[in-house]
Image 1 (cartoon, helix red, strand yellow):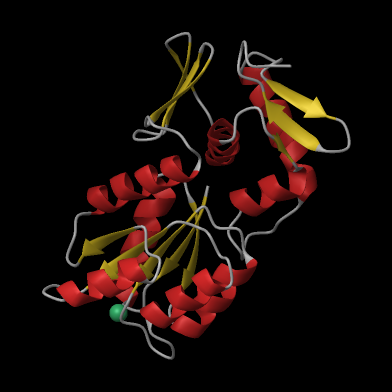
Image 2 (cartoon, rainbow, N blue to C red; image 1 turned 30 degrees about the horizontal axis):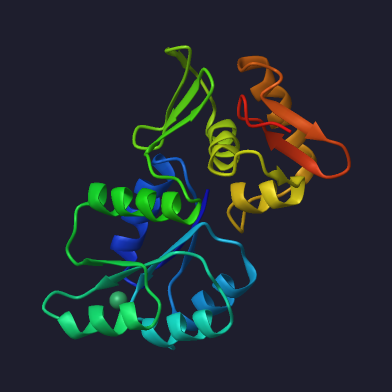
Length: 223
Ligand code: CA
């Protein structure tokens, strides 16, 4: 899962970038509204954290532009304390949730999980696929109750597929949702990660759809 973090306060941005990365997301950061507007318009983010008080172009204008351009990624806005009218304006402009500064990183993570879940039509923080369980709160994966040790890339790939079960996901889409913008991106490496995942999981779980990509098969839902 890939997140766009829009925050101009250097210290807070660095802290949030670390927290989000540790939680298993790949993170792009923008520190002004114009850059954020551009990045959100061209990259397929799974969620966006948007501070409203931004240089160059304010957060509300960025959000209005995105929504008018059919950028549908869930957006969580960060508002200043006592600025209740900002929350109202933000929600009216198309925000999906808000947090008031200062906030605990844990609350931001919980709200992001909920937004991403909702966007995928999933109700629970615990994703299940047959014997496989992925806990989006702890980033833990178990197979028949036994912990499976995954690298950060393997986890992101599996998490994306488990948020889109029974859907064919192309290699390039996987690469776009796995890597941050400045990461070296090569859709061929996706094959390598899928091969490694298959060694750690039931091999039939991730199906190769020739010429199209991969599909995570939910037991009993195939066909
Ligand atoms: Ca700010």
